[in-house]
Image 1: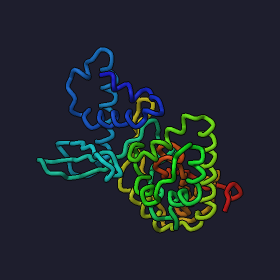
Image 2: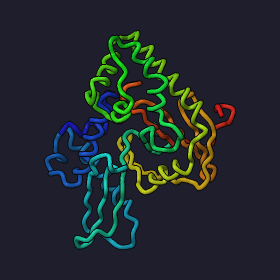
Image 3: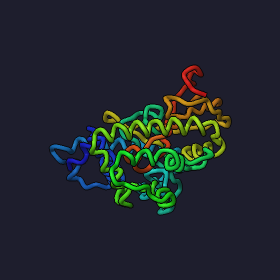
Image 4: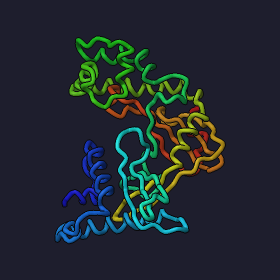
Length: 298
């Protein structure tokens, strides 16, 4: 019962992934929960509020002239999907419409969230891989702060760098363990920051905007449903035909302008699973309006 509280208060940052999975599980099943959830003296009001709001959003997404008699919510598991749910609208057992939905917690619009898209760094829109660049130019310096740790074979490194489990190879578990040494962690953080700046200085201008555009356009085929302060809202993204490389911001972010939509895509390069350890990725956010050129490094 008490899990509904996760819609009303944020947990610890380190628990975000687990909390979001619980919220998604609730949304996948809340249309068919038993009456005792809604009647609970402590949490019933919140279960009813989330259920009512979710159903209103789902019904609002159905804008066809025909009617439907059944609504099924399918949670999309695994990394092969770039959205969280499929809403199946049915008439007499036949699907008459599908809607792809991605859920975002604690926001009201796409330009207010840290990212609307996350991609592994080696997705092909820059000429060189950052992970390979880090291995070639910085990893040897990195392990100088970790006694007795020897450089791993490059092929093994690149094979495992996308992993989320530090125990995939003892090399990565030792990289993570080194963070317990405060002085080493500070030095490694500084090195990683330098490596990202160096990489973007060398390769940001090689960005293939056509490849990026394909990745962005995939996001137009879904609806973003957001929850904040007791209310649901929806948003969609629209990508223009003309993208333009604008420059580098904060030594870690590529700025791309969408001249048709008068918006920008900020491509932040960061490590998802501890700096310099695992999963370098692009965190892509939407910004309405255009940045003044003087703020950027070409």
